[in-house]
Each structure stands twice: as structure tokens, then as C-alpha cells.
Length: 118
Image 1 (cartoon, one colour):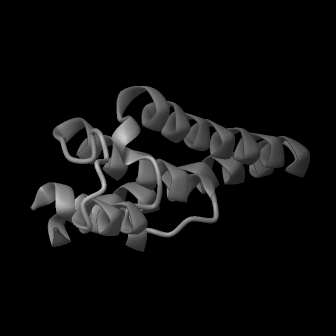
Image 2: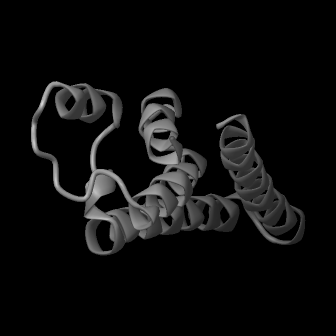
Image 3: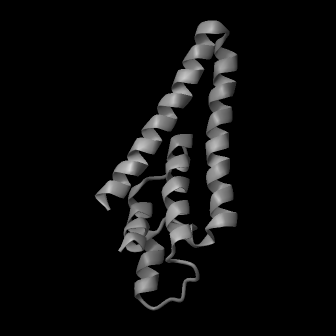
């Protein structure tokens, strides 16, 4: 689980660094306005990809993860809660959502990821 959390952190750091470097290149060559639009466009792209992956590829990864995991342990039938697709969507979708700047954390999704890994 530590390795998976490390992978999520590396993906987030690289995406945010890449987004900031592109914005800095635009600031150096053009203007602040274009850099801001590019930064917002990449943030929207990352968030959109995360949302599309969650809705169409792995619908079992919807939600933070902690509440759903507690409900599942208490006997609530939750379809597609465990599986490889759910795990991959949760890992990459969470990384993209955090890199986009959405106000979410990694703790709840990592509980769900840990349950999938286990």
C-alpha cells in the first residue's frame, strides 16, 4: 500500500510541476493572461479526465472511499466496489483530481485503494 501511495504522490507531483512549468514558459514568452488560461485549461482537463474515468470506466470508485468501505463492511451491497478497474480508476483518477487543484484529499481514497489492494 505504501508503494501505491508513493505512486499516487509521484504522479501528482509530476503533473503539478508540468502544469506550472508550461505556465512559466508562457509567462516568459507571452503574457500572464495566456499563462492563466493555460493553467486553468490544464486543471480543467485533469479534472475532466478524472470525472470521465470515474463515470464510464470504474463506477465503483465513486465517492471518497472511507464511508463506502465502512458501509460495505457493515453489509451494504455495493456493486463494483472491488476490482482491478476500480483500483486503477481510483489511483489515477485521484491523482488527476488532486493535480487539477480540486479540494479533495488523498486519505479517503487511499483507504478504498488499500481495501482493493488487500
